[in-house]
Image (tube, rainbow, N blue to C red; front, side, top):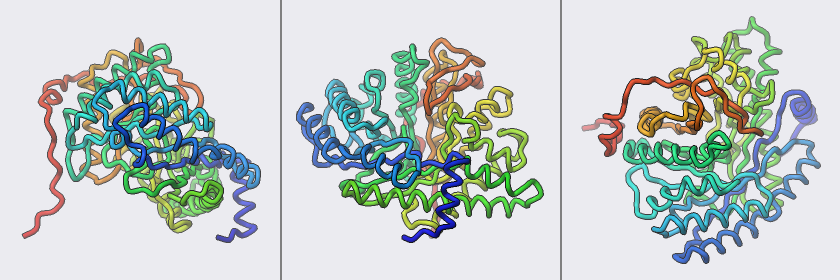
Length: 454
C-alpha cells in the first residue's frame, strides 16, 4: 500500500492539531485450545497463551508510534468468550480464571482485556449462569478485565429474563464499587447483535469464527472531522458536509491501515479489521457532539440531532470502506456521555435527556453508553431500559448496547468521576413511571418477522 507525500503531510497536520490518534490496537487471541474442566489448568493455559502472543504487543506499539509519529493511545486484548471456553458450573471457578487473566494482562502491559462474555440471547446454560453469578465479584476485584453479555439478536428476539438478571448484576456491581462511583459498571456492556471483531472496550470479545490471532485497530478522529467541517463554513449544503466527512474518514482510515499492517507483521498475526468508530475523549475538541454542533446545531440534543448523527455515521462508513477492504467492527460514531465534554454540557443544560439519547442510538454505532443514573434505580427499571435498547437493535438489525451506571448514593443532578478516558458524567433523571409488571412477566420476546413469503 503506497502513501503519497500529500497524504503524509495531511496526516501529520491531523496529529498535531486535530487530536488524530489510533485509539486502540487490540490483539484478538483465540482460546479454543485452553478449555479445561480444571479451573487452575484452564487459567494457566489462558495466561500462558496471553503472555506468548501478547508479550511484545506494547513494545511493538511503541516502536510503530516512534517510527510513524502516530500516537497509539491504548493496547488491549480481546479473547474468545469465556462462557464458551470455561466449562464451569461453579462461580468461584470463573472468578479464579478471571483473576489469572487480569494478572496476565498486567504482565503484558495492556490497559483492558475483553472476553468475560456470555451469549444468552436465547437462553442460559448452567455454565452461563455460573459466569453471570460471578460477574459482580469479577468486575469489583479485577482492574483490567471487561465483561459483555449478549441479551438479544434479530434472529432470536430478546431474553427478558436475562435483562432482569443483568439489571440485578449491574446494581450489585455498582454497590461493590461504590467508593469509585460504581466504576465496575463502566467495564460491563450488554448487547443486541454484537459483532465478533470489535476492538473497543468494554464490549470487545473475539468471536468463535476468528483466526488464531489477529490485530484489530480502533481508529478515532472526531477532532479531525470537526476541524474539516469548520473549514467548510456555514454556507455549505448538507451534501457538501457529508462529502467532507467521507474524505476525512478516508484519510483517517489510511493511517489506521498502515498501523494495522505494521503491527500484524511485528506480532506474526493476521490483520483483522479497522474499526472507524469516532470515539470521543474528555479532551476539549475531541468530541462527537462538537461535530454535530459544527454542522449547525446549537447543541447536541437539539431538534435535528438524530438526522445529523445519521449522516455523520453513514459518511464515516462510506469514506472508510473506500480506503480499506478491512473495515469492520462497529464503525460509526460513539456517543458516551461521560467521555465527551460537549455531551456532558448538553446533559447539564437539559438539551439531552435519556429519551433523546435512546432516539440517537437508532442511527449510531452502539447505544446508551456511559450513562450515569440515580443509585436507587430499581433493577427492574434498569432491565426495562436495557430491553428498550435491545428492541432498537433487534428491529433495525443493528448492534445496540447499554453501559449504564446506577451511581451509589447519587441522585439526579449529582456527578460521578471515573478519571482517564472514562471521564465524568452528570447523573441523569429517569422516567419514574413503573415498569415492574412488564419486566417481571419474563420469558423471551420473539424474533421479529423478517419476511412473509408464499
